[in-house]
Amino acid sequence: MIKVDPNKCDGCGICVYDCGADVFRFNEKKDKVFPYGNKYCVNCFLCELVCPEDAIEVVLAPRKSDFHHEGTKDTKARGR
Image (cartoon, rainbow, N blue to C red; front, side, top):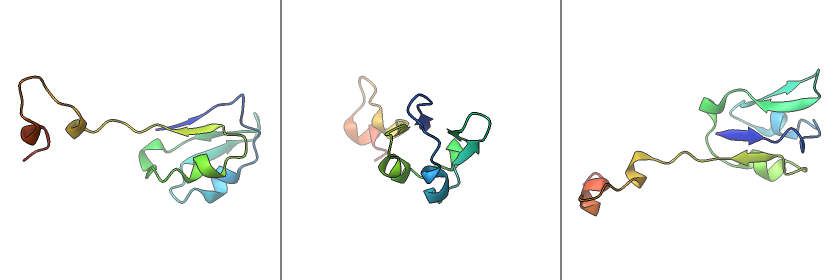
């Protein structure tokens, strides 16, 4: 999931142009960028790297395999 801090975003649009997954849109009325297509994000972190204001954060969702249930073996939790 992509988070954009509107207080930090200066509306430069670098992330809009650099994102190959077309995740961002530009709001001309607010002069800010917002995540539009989170489901298309490939977690490449390019947007975080190119944002000069450090306004973007890529938050990775935990995978099911990352959860371990009490009483199960690690091999079961990894699907083996």
